[in-house]
Image (cartoon, rainbow, N blue to C red; front, top):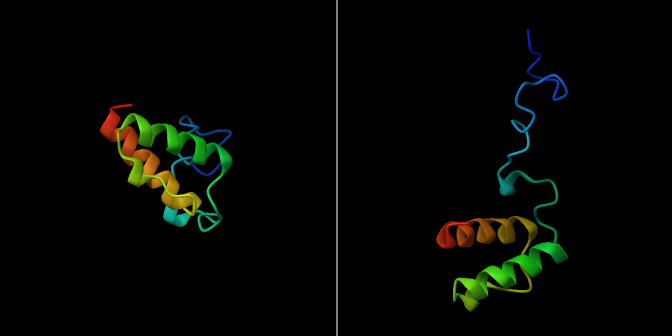
Length: 74
């Protein structure tokens, strides 16, 4: 029997890695340097410069990155 509450024993180790950015403990903090760089690259590739803003939170940056990746089919 697989213990669903122990990630070490869970058959699907990624089952608990997907969390809505709105539920992140640090979601209200400024986006990371990696997010800033990746978002800038994606906005350029998608020809949507207005999708980039320096003052985004981690959660908002993550959602924009996901949206742009979807648009670009990445």
